[in-house]
Length: 193
Image (cartoon, rainbow, N blue to C red; front, side, top):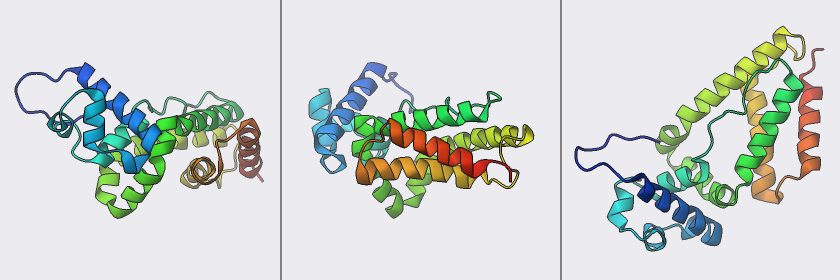
């Protein structure tokens, strides 16, 4: 997440890392509701203004703490849809299963519903890139005859991510049986007629 900075002394990346680490710890211990700038500042050994200069709201801080390491690298077309699908599902489960991410998700989703502008600011750039890459994976699989031409990549993406999020938020951490079952279900549902 990059934002324009005013001229002056460069920010210390170690401070950013300390704040994110502190936010992740607070999320895991106290959930989204317990994530306050005061709590994070105390734990990181910084002042509240230091945090506000970097993140304008609790949602911005929680989002970066939860998803800082996600880059969409698992969404690639290797020429084998089964392998690509497996990599995507496993990477998504790993991403959403991180303790801080799992703790932050209910609050982030609720905030996104209340503030679609911030959702667009935080999520859309990354999500658009990942969806475009997934669409290319599907297009490649269609061209090879592995996937039916009538498959909508956005609906399929939502189905995969939605199943994972639901399992994590409402039920439990997805186990190997869930991952295997989801992959098999998607493969069966996307085969050409």
